[in-house]
Length: 379
Image 1 (tube, one colour):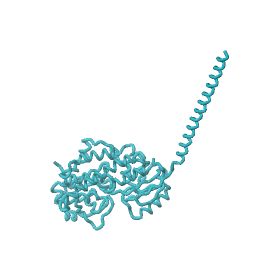
Image 2: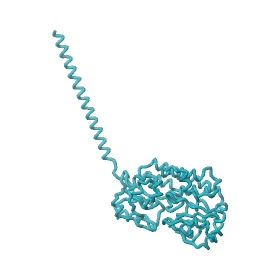
Image 3: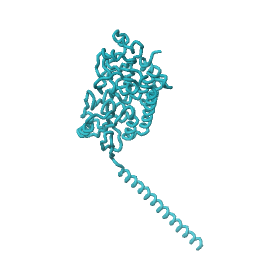
């Protein structure tokens, strides 16, 4: 009996010890969880709220660590932003028309229009931009004289950071890489950057194989009279200069999408072998239809041979107006029209690939027919 009693007391003591050990263990786990939670809170507290971004002008701009709301400075920036991060845009520089919305997304067509900082309009609505509260205003394109001071002044006026990202035919890949770092969209940026580099490298490689003397003599005419040209050396005419002999040489090439006005006598003197017709970026038509029946223009070599084309324009002109990333499609379209034997892929191939990659849109046969009705040689 005594033995049984002692054994019972022993079991009781052991059970108590086990309970105490379990309690201490749970307390330790709880303390560990609290410590882990505290550490997490400390780490979150230590996460930087801002960062310094160096833009293409060398300006060091303080920005939020995470960018979710952006505004475009103008049409060039809008075109690029719609391809990399449209969901982050709080407004537009220019209105998206119905035919553009088909490719760009109707959900973005209803965004407010803020206007543009540069260009012929220069109608940037500072109050509307401030009210939309973007975290950054993004400018894309070529650097202009005095731009650094301009952007610094405007940045102070509206209280919103502004950055400039340089872009050109040979640097769209770098522009996208910078934008990916800025916007936190590095995977999407790499996809677009890789496409741009591949397209540029292919085109420059082909053009390097064609002697200057064998390149097409091209004139790029814009507007509804055909008497405005995108001259050699103009920022808007980079693709033509790259892929052909741009014979539209003037004393001072304008950077405007309206081009330089010339006389028909001057065009006749140039007598281009190929003419490209397009709208001038001001909602005007182009001269393509009239050129084929106008008796005056009928004297030109390009018209007589049927070597005149209408530049596709939806959602943007493939060559210019704006001279933005749409030029990457233009630099693939134009040389395939001028030197088709130099490429293993067709205009249709590259158009479908471009629209899918940049706009997430699958071109139908009807779309192709509409876009390129007058953009390729007739069979």
